[in-house]
Length: 222
Image 1: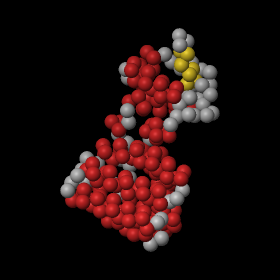
Image 2: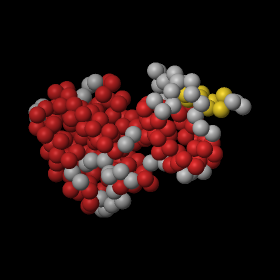
Image 3: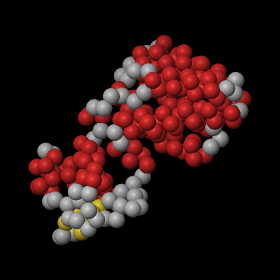
Image 4: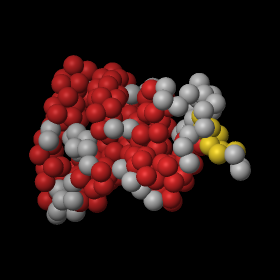
């Protein structure tokens, strides 16, 4: 299953403004030490309210991109080391970037899982796929989503790569939010159920190539 098309309602307004400001900093329009425009100026530029601007600045300040100096204004800080939490950064990313990273992450993940999975993990994958199928048949979207995410988390664990596993679990939180909004019923899950079952069996058969092929097809749906 792929990420949904880019829609304004998916990303909070403050996050969108934060992305725009970050792009202006990255492009060099605002350089290190520069004072960024005042709240009224930013409100006019982006067509948003004061609370949105303040939240956007707070996001950038938490990421280490700007420094808020009381009574003086907000200044571009040294962004050579960004401390923004990964899950927050992912929520600000655009759809194309998320798709590209998720594709690389999950293809590698299923290949490693095919090489390193245990019988216990295969049993867990099949159990979650069975839950997913029953939720589809009962048209229970939330249960279907939870089973889908759980299935992929087990694959991440089966990869036996701790960094890969941690990255996917962080990604899973963002993916879950997207799917919750984009897929209000179980139709999309139904379309990919057979491919998920084939993916599971490829991993069980220790076939990294087939696993990658099925994961690629799953990501290409919709």
